[in-house]
Length: 168
Image (cartoon, rainbow, N blue to C red):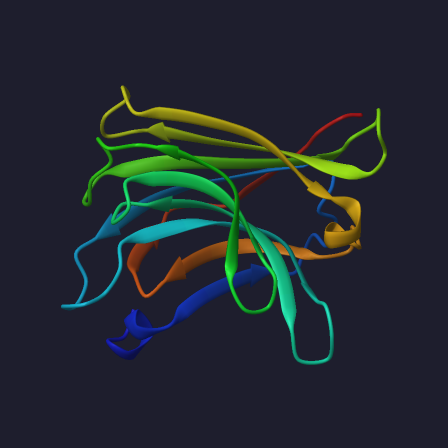
């Protein structure tokens, strides 16, 4: 990670699987002290796609150590909008965490995508959080979109990438 990279949003997208629904994405993350003024966060990005020719939309499950939160957010092209967040005051830098994000369509209403995000401490297994939320289908738009890693103005490490199929 270069010094300049800590001053912007970094997204690493995997293009080998372009289906976002019926998937669970998993990674282990470690957030470390960056340059003065940098943030401390890391997450999994999902449904990364062009909304217009110059605007992207996506969903991110994000551990934000600065704010002591774990949350699921929708990026509308300008801002990260919180769908749901929980407090994780014991989260700290220099520890490993496992983040999982699952997306399945709401089979009952057929008007939203159900999102489940989990955080599990690896260095400290007592740290856990689970979020169940949803995103309206008109904001999800397409299933043909990418997933990957996310860090905003943060020095973060990701140890692996796993994609599991979720059966309907």
